Length: 420
Image (cartoon, rainbow, N blue to C red; front, side):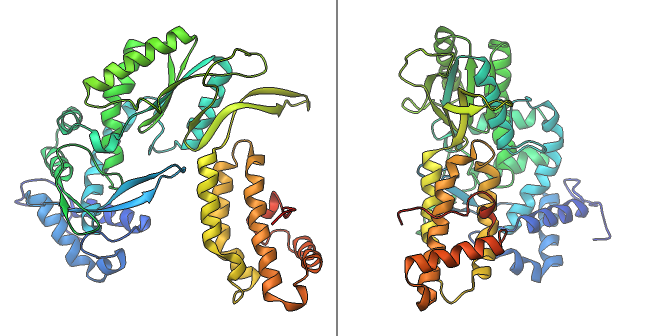
């Protein structure tokens, strides 16, 4: 790695950039691609593997292998999606390009674009959406149908060309877009549009595409209308139903122009009904980034109750988390100690609490108490003298009082459901 710059190569890519890309890929870990090579396997012959990537990229002879297609549940519940898993080497190559492209495009992105951007998060988008729902009466809940499968390559390339003078970045973006998907049965699926979710470069390309296709267009056509966009998930705020219908129709037309389509059933116009807005309309709730926004009872700083639109974990997200809790089969892990079970599930549950518990966390209490029910069943199965429910509950209360921080969720609810 002592020679930092390429010599006699078609493209000026440094070995240091490849090394930095490797460090990022290693930190992110991730599953093997079509070649079955894990991050650990790649590291066994690290110097040689990184040299091959640098040599091929700097000479223009790098061609990405197929991307392994994996079906996974959607992040916030409600169906599945196809995740594209590139090889470790390809993730490094993509990260090299990302390190050049991202610093150029990031400063120009719209302030209300939140997805996969430094210093921004989904919770920031949810919080901004919440505050705007208090001020405006109508919302357009946008759903772009099969966005990652439908993005037009020519428009992606046009956007990249407008923001880099490095021909190798454009060249390799074209090749990554054209890389086929390898389906679970081994069949290669060629594509003529779309960019698989899961690659290092995909979030930057998606944001860049939608910057021109949606953000800039909205700023020009409807400068007074606010929105929050997290990649292809967006909410638009309007002052009236008439304005909402006008803007929704214009957005649908714009999406058609750029080769996309709004989902006819999932895109809807929503009235922000609460204590002061009491009209009667078909849709009075919507879901954004795993949170359902609807009228809820809250307290002000003086303890007085009032009704306003607020987000809480959605039913789909709760069902997904509940299914995961059931899959742990905690009550059957009698070969483990309680402390071992805590070490296993705490990182997962803590993540749920930090995300879904950021707003109206009481909606999570039933799920968290269900974990406690499984743990009481574990006590009754592990210790014969505690098989009786009353004895198990006495033991439970003793444990939660002596070790209140053993399980992360006990900070919120150490209780057990009455029926379990």
